[in-house]
Amino acid sequence: MVVGNETPPMEQHNTSTTADSEIQNKARLAIIELANMISVPMSLNAIVRLNVADAIWQNGSNSPLSASEILARVVPSGGDAHNLERILRMLTSYGVFEEHLSPNSSNHRYSLTDVGKTLVTDSDGLSYAPYVLQHHQDALMRAWPRVHEAAIDSTTEPFVRANGEAAYSYYGKKTEMNELMQRAMAGVSVPFMKAVLDGYDGFKGVEKLVDVGGSAGDCLRMILQKYPHIKEGINFDLPEVVARAPTIPETGVSHVGGDMFKSIPTGDAIFMKWVLSTWTDDECKIILENCCKSLPVGGKLIACEPTLPEKTDESHRTRALLASDVFIMTIYKAKSKQRTEEQFRQLGLSAGFSALRPFHIDYFYCLLEFQK
Image: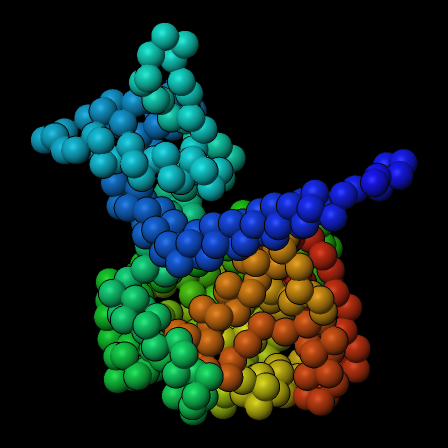
């Protein structure tokens, strides 16, 4: 006998079983997606190699094109449009392309979303495309099957186990890899630096600025263009890196090669971007101590670094940060890492800085001002 709205025992059991089945189905679907996740970055790598974004963009038209039309622009000799479409559809599901369906046809056409537009080559020849390619070079790909070994023995990173030497020295011997790294860093740095220069005024009053790990000098050039009162800019990096850095005329920039673990050129302020995250705590302390020694009292180190949240969530930002953290562990140093603001604060204090001021002007990077 059923009284009021009370659910019969059999119906309760069926409802519970259905809910459990739904949960299990979603869990199985999620693990299948994760297991096949390699398809995403490798497909992204493929469309960069094929220059698909520029083919669609066509100087800003971004007109929807079919796979056949795209292929005709990127591979004039012909190819397999069906296979290209499979790649385009998959990346559409991750927000790289927008799919357009004709009302009376099964023909799919594709345009670029805002995500896809980051791969378009701009008027300065820059985009995020080299950043994608840089992550998927053969030497780096050889390291990924050995990620688990970083959890077993952290004395040697997976990249070294796979390639026989550390990433930085390996890059230094490979001209093509080093040049791609410079293009990748330029493509990432320029839009970030535009945000920095729009939202941060800490370069006011600086007369001599040192960029540690400045690569080709793009960041330094942009800073000096915005703040012409800076009389001298020093682009400081490894000798083999600055040897390939282009001359930056009429800006007062000079390229200086050296080793930041030994000494750093003096200046009123020191700037660095994505340097500390690729080193261990002990190594970071040495870098920070050398920065502190090279600054006058009242000087500052302006470091742009990804900063991890204290609590893990499923946001795009957190996923991007944690994925980058595992990349660092795999490629650069098994004990190098991205850090929270508090961890950076404690490192700075241990190296002789008196305070840390964070500026949140970008979704990925945080600007950390270490004050002496």
